[in-house]
Structure formats: C-alpha cells, structure tokens
Amino acid sequence: MNAGFFPLRTANPPPVYVAGTRVDLTCRADVLTQLRVALGDQGALHVVHTLNPEICMNAHRNPAYRATLNKGDLNVVDGVGLQRAVQGKTGRDVDRICGSDLIYDLAELAQTAHRSMYILGGAPDRLVKAKATLRGLYPDLKIHGRAPDFSTTLSLPDHDEIIADLRRTRPGVLAVCLGAPRQEMWIAQNRALLQQCGVSIASGLGGTVDFLSGDVRRAPKWMRKSGLEWAFRLMQNPRRLRRQISALPEFALRVRFDRNFVSLADTNPPLEGHQ
Image (cartoon, rainbow, N blue to C red):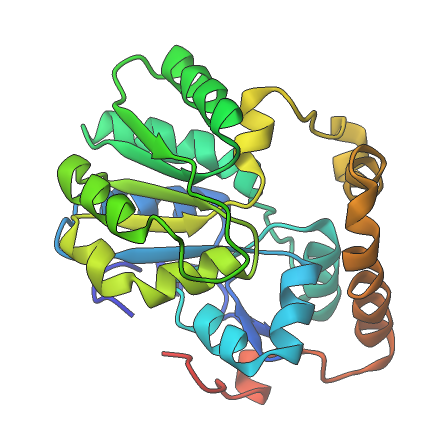
C-alpha cells in the first residue's frame, strides 16, 4: 500500500475476506477523509475498488482478478448482498458506499482540492450528458472525459490517445466506467502510466455514466435499502439476467452454508496480490 494513505486505519476494524478478496470496513466518513488526503498527494496513485457480490464471485473464479482487487488501496462495500454478508459475519454495522454515489463525493473533493476529474467510459452521448450533470453541480470543477472505442478485450483501441489525453489534463480523479472486471484490470495494467499522468485516485465505477446522464434510472431508495436494486436493474436491462444467475444464487448459498466463504482477517491470511 502507499504509505500515509490510511492515517485512520487503526480507528476502523480489520478487513474481512470474501472468497479470498479483501473487503475493508472503513466507515464512510473515514473513506472521505482518506480520499481527501489522497488528492493532496500528487506523487502516488491510490486505487479504490467498489465491491459487490458479482465482483466477489468473479474474483473467486479468477485468481488474477482476485489478486488485482487485493492490491487495491481501498476496497469498499457497494452491493447490499455483500454488506449483509459482512455484517452477518462481523456483527458490525457496515457502510455501503455505492460507486454511483461515490462519483459525487469524488467530484466535490476534487473541486475543493482544485484538481480536475476525468471520466473514461460510457456511450459518447451519455458521457456528454454525464459531464454536463457534474458541471451543473460543481461549477468550479474541470471535467474531462472520453468514450473509448468499443472492444471486447482489455486493451482499448484508442489507448495511446487516452494516455495522451491524461498526460495533457493531469486529472486528480480518474473514474473508469468500463464495467467489472475490465475496469479494475485496466487500471492495474496501466497503473504506472496513470501515476505518470498525475492521477491521485483511480476507481472503477461501472455504470455511473448511465446514471449521471439520466438515460438510466436508479432504483428507488426503498428498493436499494431492501436489497432489491438488482431486480430493478434487471427490469431495465434483461440482458443482465445471465450474469446475475451465474453469480448471485451461488454467492447467497456460499454465504449461508460455507463457513469459510466470509472470514475474518486473523483467520484468513492474505492471498496472492494482497499487500
């Protein structure tokens, strides 16, 4: 980990491991404090992962992806299913920090620190709307972005143009909205380059561009709190069904019947890639 990024780590409980992936139990207030500190450190890159059951199951099946996640500087709880699994194991209240909410915190922190933000991902028309939304909320924030050319591989066809753009804009915050696991693997693959571009915080934020644009509605708050957000998103995009079926039922069964699936840090030593 980058020295100095976790000044409040001792105030928070130790992490837990879900299928071998580290999950930090840092409360929301301390997460924001740490991100504020990170934006003041322009010599290091701090990677934030927002975890949910699908991501944990993907990491469970893919050791390389699990190792990438375990190298993250901060792994926060996003999905309700993951939140409940960790709370059930630890008996602690666990703050849920959704990527689609975190983008607003990052924008506000960047504006206060006089750093810019760069959004990578989303459809071109939605990215334009997303940037306009943030500019309306944070008028003093410089926001850049690029909708990369479509590719089914990790390497983006316009990679050189993206890096050149990042070198020119030198954003404090980079929101990579390519979907998991691609976004986390892309950040890891390009970590050294991103640091050279002056990026202080990089985070994979999935479908955030779609929500910011207003073209895709978020689930009502009561559905989010009750753990039914997945159903709302499925109704909006039925193509998610195959992905959810391959992950969510198994996640729930393992949490219920596999005593070692969610384990405390002192009973589950770090796996490969954990620092």
